[in-house]
Length: 218
Image (cartoon, rainbow, N blue to C red):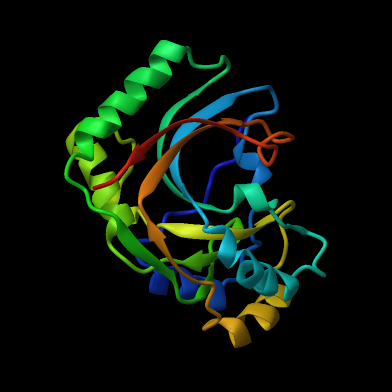
């Protein structure tokens, strides 16, 4: 069984307002994934390594809350779109086809800047918001090509800084995050999207992934 996820938000302001006034428990991130082994193939934008100290600084503010898991450094990324989710590994041909399809969809896309200006909280994790239309342009191109399983009206590109490992009353986290709402992680220049193959069960989702492809912009 995979646990349902709370309603999707259409803006970061909506997500923050819901968190500030939330009366229900925050949700278990890991319960979203199956118990048995699965493989998740998808496109993402890795966090620039030079921004990791700023991300770590934000994480320190809630690291004392034992029901929040801090993702390892390799996991810091902005998610774009799923390609496949299955009990078997994709074949080399399937991976190659995914790269070729993205190359066609993203033809003419130029490198762009991405900023992480403030902190927010979704149902199952603490996140840094992003500013910049680059991720939305990439996902829109995938959707237009019929290869992006994303609802654009609820696509809020973000950097996950902490995931909830159990349902929990939100007050302790509100006390930490509300004064730090305007904490910045920084900005980065994005010239490449990365295709990653991730182990995706409840116990493996944070384990190292394989970089199996990429598309450079410009």
